[in-house]
Length: 162
Image (tube, rainbow, N blue to C red):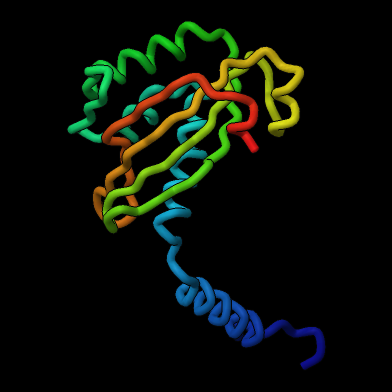
């Protein structure tokens, strides 16, 4: 009958839905390096949002560093930095990620902390920002949950961002 709508599902829709789900199911899992880069990006976003809770979740329970900081001391330092800054904008460049063991990674990150947004490394030339280079040791907990077990930092130079 003309003008009558069918109650049958549109087969074309179901076919495309099946194809889409198959592609998602067959997509390659992210690499450990991608997971670490994503974690660093999330840490930058959490710091800018002043979200100490999310930052704390990225610290390993057995955190210890050369400065004598443990997990609790590092949490307090992060809290102090977030509270001290009225406006916090970060620009981070992951310099390298290495895997001495499958569940252990070493990452080098250059980070600029400024009072206004930094969109690229070139903007740092004319901006008053604190520049740091972080050397991180990360360990994997579970399938793709990486946490910082050790960190070291020192002042960085502009060329660390290129």
